[in-house]
Image (cartoon, rainbow, N blue to C red):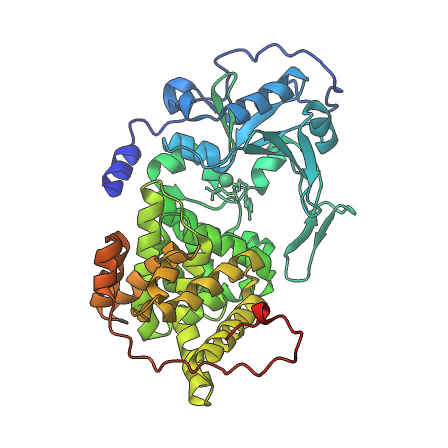
Length: 477
Ligand code: ATP
Ligand code: MG
């Protein structure tokens, strides 16, 4: 179904982009509360880009968010240029609803901040402005200049990686700095024209993901671009162009330099792209998983866990593609489950009781991964809860199953249990029992309970209280 959709989208009706001329005049701009930008190229207002008209690209304006429209309108009214850029335009050309909108402008962050009351300047490495409209945030960036200029605002390390880069520039320079040609399109909602500096429109229509500039240099500048190539090609069904693909496998080591938190963010995007299965397969093919992305490395190299992980990824893809949300904690709990099981066994073999051993194993696995991949704390707490519930699903006698049903994480724990059953780790019968138990009503539930075979806990005898002690406060463990 998806493949057919892509085939339909990519059947080129016309591969030609139009010559660099504007079909409509720019909207009139009024100067409101901000200064006019100093540098403007009036000789060629499209800066040498090919201009693709609405007649050709047919972007559906209904797919644009109001917030993005208000942002470009606000900036243009104040006398600046402003375009929707990046992945949003690429997705619009593919007729997908973009998941977020970025805007690029010649206004400085301070200008943007002044124009929009509900906005804030963020970031150190890249200074951006977040403009807030209700739930939606539009990220506005000032056109970036070349990082190669010697300036205190740009810095490159020994291996060519860009460390800091806050040099403002022209739209032409901004386009050169973007990663793939498909990501360097600038859409002006007012004129409905797309400016195309690197033939990205034709590449998208031809189903190609192509790096702008020399691919190896671009990967050295920012190794995460290798992961982006794999993720975007899987997500969009674009084929990585040969020269763009060639350096990846050979330069997988470059990822070791990337800060763990950035790797984590990119991995999360990959897992939640709706195409995790294809992405993971492609990462393996490009040797990007080995020793570089610790979580994947761990996960894919244990045959026991592979089936479970693949099922979890499939489950996540299905949810995302059918418009449901997927909880990252659940996914990471799945990815590390077999690692956790192995650690649990070790602690039990050392003679620890099951539950303390479980807690030690959970902490150990999370600590190891957090060190390498910086899993945020907000995820690890839920992961522990989901794992911690698992032994409780094996208790089907007495009051315990009733208690579990009311646990706030019951649903996540139950879904996790079902995956364990489906992967063959546990008998299917256990999952089916819980499904039936949750659906049954009062008496039927009681009838389903199993005989309590657990040894009865011995009641501690109350020591005789010294006279005057409050007997009502005495509790039995
Ligand atoms: P997604 O659909 O996942 O959001 P995206 O391409 O929009 O994909 P973002 O991280 O939102 O990804 O980035 C927005 C734009 O910023 C990109 O389209 C690209 O033009 C530029 N960009 C992002 N990351 C890089 C990078 N590492 N190097 C160069 N340009 C980048
Ligand atoms: Mg994006």
